Length: 146
Image (tube, rainbow, N blue to C red):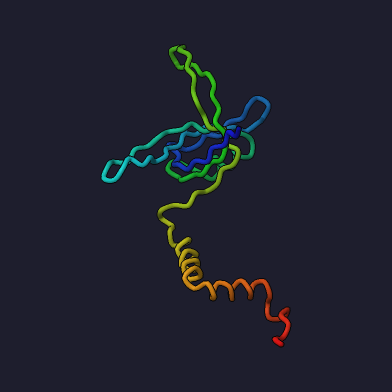
């Protein structure tokens, strides 16, 4: 069985990098993920705690801040925790293995040009084949037609 999670969300506050007594970097963040509530309904959000260690923690602390969209690949872990009143609870958190910048709604133009090229290639397969052929066999390497 695999325990893999890929999730995209926004940081709810700025990450705070901390060091263990042995000097290992760690960061705990909370992300908000939109949940589809249905057509015409108000959006809802789910909140998840994410823990990162070493270089992943440093990357998050140096490159992300509150409200920034982040994509996380990791695993789910359960574990006990104690609140301020001393009550014991069981909780779920995501242990981040890889993080990356997620595409934002504000930058759709970056992918728009690529999507337009793909649509054009799909609508004209012969054009796409010529393009692939030229990339695979540049003019200098093509043999003359017989």
